[in-house]
Image (tube, rainbow, N blue to C red; front, top):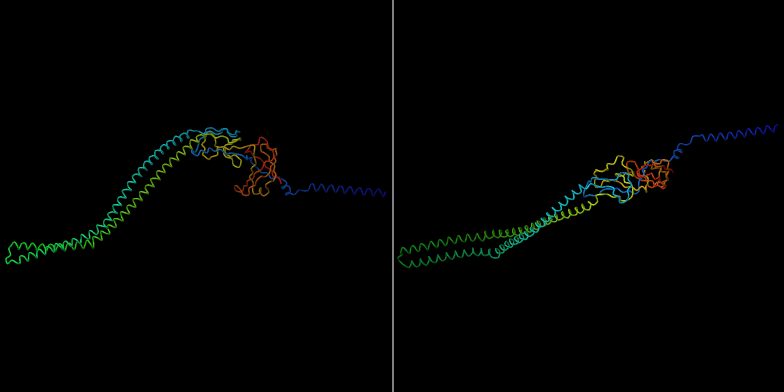
Length: 410
């Protein structure tokens, strides 16, 4: 009886223990999980854009023609082959510019020829002017040398000689008067005619005396005043002649240089116009744009692999500038995913992290990838650039500019 009681007691205790253990485990399963642990387990989801790693922007690049009108363009999104013509331009404005350029060249050739002829005439006339200036300079130099070597001394000697002649005239008149006086004094009686002769002789002496005084005054002025003044005047005339000659030669040289520059300017203008015309003719051959490779033609310029949010203005009849991107040719076989991350996203991602790519066009498809690059500085505001390398195989339906969700896991 006691043995049976002991067995029943032990069985009850064992059952209680089993029940207690089961309840404890159930309680542990029902306990709320750590919210931070749940968040850490959830993957980071970022929207991205499929971007072709190989693309070509198409511009007409015909800088000689400026803006051109599109005559024809293949539809947006068309798959094209390398060498296929994809854009045609209207040639009316191009041909008008070519005709105007040809007329400009003809006028430039006439202008250059006229400038060359005028330059040759100018050089010939300058040579004559140079010779004339040299003659005037030599004439002034000869006059200066003649004055110093001959005229100056001659004038001084002439002044001195005039004095000597005046003195001689006075002496002759005085001697003649003396002789007459002695001769007439020897006679007791003086005739009236003799008185007249003596009177004339006396007047001749007085006249000679007056002329001598005048000659002495004049000669003194010549030697003391006129000669020094003429010395200075002759010296100044020679200096002015020399300065005039030097200025003439300098003016001739400067004028020749200026005229030569004008001639060269006309020749350079002609060369430039001829070169531009040659470029125009060469660019005239490029009035169409051909695809540089195989790919999909998309209108306009892509931004970070995506199309502009607004409809593209590119169409037949639209005008495009020289550097304007008319279309972008993308290679769909080689793509990556471009991401835009916030600072918070950047803090939890590293290059090389694995990720799953879910194309929007095939949301149930998961393609493997990895973070290929991360920017250390924002490209706009607080937005950072990142790219994802696609390591798995994408569905055929996925094309560049389409979107995807990228799930990043640690």
